[in-house]
Structures are given as structure tokens and as C-alpha cells.
Image (cartoon, rainbow, N blue to C red; front, side, top):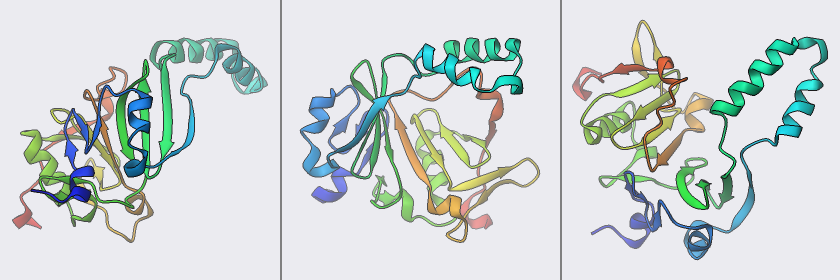
Length: 210
């Protein structure tokens, strides 16, 4: 059985992290502040329509009126929902939709995040991605430094970089992107229609091929 500390930071794909469960209200999450920290920031994700128009007006001649209208239309269709709220507490960034927890992201690798008993932040090379691929029972989707594993509804950033010629290449501590790597847990996979074309589905070579 994992220790109390490890269990508090163990990933449960599509369910939550430790005692944090998707679907919790902000009050239920706040009741766990002794473990996950107190709120240090909270705000709506969607920019109010008036503020968006005022901001675009400041661009002056940098954008045509048609470009501004296209931007507004795109934001209206694919931007954050009106009930989306982001909260920071301790080493976590949390997002709520309609007052229900739907995303959990450790802001920086200051705490371990366990999957199958292994700390994803402590694994070397591509081993964290191999573990995710194994649990995903299929390859991940890669775009630059991002990787998404849809069966787990887990996305990571900064563990690797995808190159169209070389494939998936491991990053290490010499790279600032690796030092700021993140693991993002969701209650459902990240599959926005307007972004899926950015990703390349790729299986990783076995560890013995290093």
C-alpha cells in the first residue's frame, strides 16, 4: 500500500489526484487545503465581451475590421466557457466548469506525481512517456513539447520535443522547458476539433533502443 503522502499525489486517470476527485465543488476542494494548499488566486477564464472588444480596438491599424470580427467569432466559438474558473492553490492549478473540478495541474515539479508507483517527474529520458503509453494501451499524440494520452485524459508538457524527422526526443535538465514540465489531468480527453491537426500520433521505441 502507498504511504499517505504518496497516495495524496497518486494519479487516478479520469477520476482525480489523491483525494481530489473530478466533480468536487470548490468548497469540497477547500476542505482539503491542509494537503493541497490554500487558494492564492482565482478568476474567470473567459474575457468579458466588452473587454475583448476594447482590447481589439487598441490594436488600431494592426488588424482590419474583418480580422477583428473573425477573432471575436473564433473566441466566441472555441474560447473558454462562461462558467470556466481557474484557481491556484499550493503547487496546483485547478480548473472548474460550472463549479465542478474538471482539471488538475501541478504547476511545477516541486512535488512527486505518482502513476503505478513511479514519480512521473523523476523518470529519466522517455520513461515517463513510455509509462503513460503503456497505461494508455496505445500511442500518444505529440505536438512540439506536448503529449496527450486520450484513454487516460492526461496531457504532459516539457518531457520531450517532437520533430517531424527524428520523432519524439527526450528533454533533460539542461533545457528550461524540462525544468518547467507539467502533468495535466482532465475528466475527459483534450480533443478540440480546431487543434487536433497539430498532433502526430506516434509509438515510442522500447527502452532498450536508447
